[in-house]
Structure formats: structure tokens, C-alpha cells
Length: 459
Image (tube, rainbow, N blue to C red; front, side, top):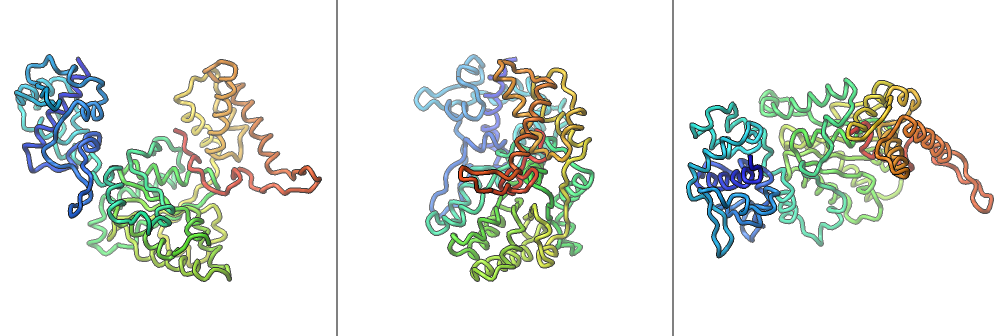
């Protein structure tokens, strides 16, 4: 099979059917195609989009398929043509192209391309496939989750100068940019159960609204830094094909920001406009610190605005799943706690979890006589983030010896080095003038108190 030719013909067949069938919309195109056919927003139009007719050129075909010379890949097929003037590729005999293509693709290809699934349903050559157009449509993420759509909406809604502070507060990640998947995480039984409830609630939100259950979909992740709170939020976003709006609350409550309360409101507004999405608020304990402070009345107003915004937002009404995270649950007051309908604990991994984390961190590595159980015995108290750092050190040490295969000795030496560095970090240090400088006191918080998102992330 000529794989490059199959890729290019799929693109040509998809473009041809999409141009002819007005019942299809942009959600029927695979994200890899939407990206290359995207047109920018023009005054008076909706924010950017995919406009008909789709024109396949050598340039956008190369981007969409990864085939270096698209025309060369299909030039010998009787059903293809190229316009020498503008380089447009087209089908001269679409039916022949469809028969040729369906003889060379599998069901996975159809599941990733609703347009192609529709073509197969309508063709006698597609009888062998057990994939419907509806199946493929359901498994293909909508255009609202694409980076180009997100950027177009943000550009349309927010003024670059007026909203510069607000835009500095948030990081919007499209599903295609999130590398962490739920398969890359080692989860506790409770965490798995909460994630499953979330997925179920999102799938059945119309029913939940119908029976009046609207106070759902506000979670608080609690646990030490490095235990995977950020990773789980991103993994859920990847699994559901949803964008995730990430906010560090310490920045929201920074005294150096201007109209902080207004920025808080706009943070929630961008989440609502990107819906369905996940709004992830990190460092939620910043709320409690600010509420106890007698200073900065403007910041207190911002926190009150934040709490009111949490009350007002809803998974059922707004299609926004709210996830907050804290490393310091002891600093939250009752007003903060009662905003959430679920509390999810992220403890340090036990021995079995550490062994599982090590197995998956190393699954793409070249390993020799590696015994994760022995390493797990030696690493009590370490988080998933710590274990990733240990393995990174072992790999680098092997590379300095011109080896790409790591051994048990490499890993155990890296554990010892990590322990020594951790002891130094937490010890009282003496500066050049003999003045005592206290360590940060945290066992594995890497000095900043933040969840680095690697926690039990083992991919």
C-alpha cells in the first residue's frame, strides 16, 4: 500500500464530499483538516471558521497529511488532477477515488473522519465497515476545542490593550496541546471514581438539568505538591476533548494587578465563552490568605467576586466544569469549602502506586535489570513528580557514560542523589557571612509550593 497516496486521496475525497454535501459542518472534519482550512475572522462575521469550498493545494495538503510531495504521491492515479496555474489538486472521477480509498483504509481511519465515514455509508464499497457516520461524529472533537477556534474567539472578545492583565492571568490549552492522558496517570480508587462520575455527569447534563440537579461539577483537589492535581485536570480535558482554562489564583490576588475584581469576572467569562470547557483554578488557598488580611480592600473585593462567580457558574447551565486545587487545605475557611460539591484527595503515593508510577515512567525508556519494587521500597514519601526527577537523573547519568540503557544501579544512585539534595534543601544553610539561612521546611515541594502537574503523571 502506498501510504502517502492514501493520506492525500483521503484529503481529496473528504474535501470533495464536504463541498457537495451541505448537511455536513466543520465538526465533521478531522481537526487536522480544520486547521489548514481555517479562515480568519472578518469584521461582521462570526469568529473565524471553515468556509466552503475547500481548496486542496500542495501546500495545505502537505500540512494536513504530512506528505512531503502530495502531488507526486497521487499523480499516477487516473482519478487525480493538478491545476498547473494555482497548484490545486482535485478528483476527476470521485466515484473511482472512493472505491480506491475504501479498499485501502481501516475502521480506525473512518472513526477519525466523519466525512469519510459518511462516504463509506453511502458506498457499496463501504459495506464491510462497522463504523457509522454518527459513531465517527461522536468520537471526533468539535471545532470549539481547536486551537485556531479558541484563539479566534479570544481575539474577537478581548481587547489586547484593555484586557492585557486579564489575559496574563489565564492559560488556555486546547485538547490537541495536552499531552497528558488519563492512561498516563496512576490514580487511587477514589480519584478514578470521581473522574467517572464527572464523565457521566457531562454526558448526561441535559437529564440532570431536567430533574433539577444543577449544583454539580465543582471539585476541589487537595494534596501536597507533585501529587498530580494539575495532571488529572488536564487528563480529563484530553479525555473529554475539552479546552482547559488554567488560572493561578496567587496572580489574581497580586497587588500589582489593576482592576483585579474585573479580571476575575473576565476569567469566568472566557470560560463560559469557551464552553464546554474545564476551568482549573490553582493555589485556591490564596483565597483564605487574602480574606484574613486587613490590607488591600480591592483584593478582598476580588476574592468576594471570585466566590460569587463560583456560586454562579454551573456545569449544567454553563457547561463549565470547575476544578480548584490547593496544597494547603488547612488555610481554607468554611466559606471556601462549601463552594464545592466534591472534595478529591491526592495523597502521596503508597508503595504499590510508586512501583506502578515507575513502571509507566520507564515504559518508553531502554531499561536493563530494573526492579521497580526495590525502588519503591527505597522511595517512601516521594511523589510522582519526585520519581520523575529521579528517573531523569538516571537517564542523564547514563548518557554521560555514552549509554542509553539505564540499569537498576543508575536508578538507585539517582535515588541517593535525590535524598542528599533534599536533605541539603531542608537543612539550615550558612551564607558567606556566617548568617543562618533557614531552609524552606517542605519535604518535597521543590521550593515554590506549587503542584507541578507531574505528580502521579507517569507518561
